[in-house]
Length: 261
Image (tube, rainbow, N blue to C red; front, side, top):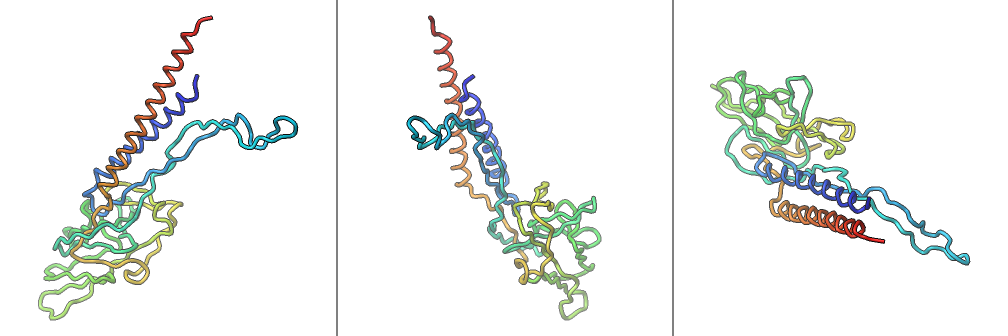
């Protein structure tokens, strides 16, 4: 069987996964704080027909080798944590991070997840929660009857209580950072969990160790529509040319099968 059939098939598989990756990026163009994935490829094994430097005649050496590549594979789709645009919402519980950092979210399992989606809501007990009802960690509870909520860039949460003349501090929002953000594992719902590749979360104070907070804003997705459309064209053409290579290989096999003595 011709090598080119399997080599071209690997190209079709790799580019199909590339299109899947692009589709996910495009479908999340309006997802709060979504970070796009960049697909990375890697060539496969090579069959060495002649080693470079091997002897030929009269002590001469091969100046170059003869290798046949055996295809391609997808090796990673790395999260790109570039800053997304900030969108003003006017909602006092919307908080955008500028710079590095993640909010900590307590999952029902007791595990802590991480997110950059700062579209928080108030639970029945006054605590700040995500759109799925998961609590911000460490917990921040807004007292009943508070007339104003003021979230400073350094994470301090101030409220105006009934009958008070000045704002009162009720808590501190902490952010965490990672040595390798790209090593985080996405679990959906705009959240990530740490892995051995990302390293452990390092708690930092906003404006000091990590980025700062911006009340009344939400971070948008960092997906660039034009870039993804260009990538889709490239993936489509690469898929098409790989299929053409399979067709050409099949035509060559037909010619060989048609030979007569």
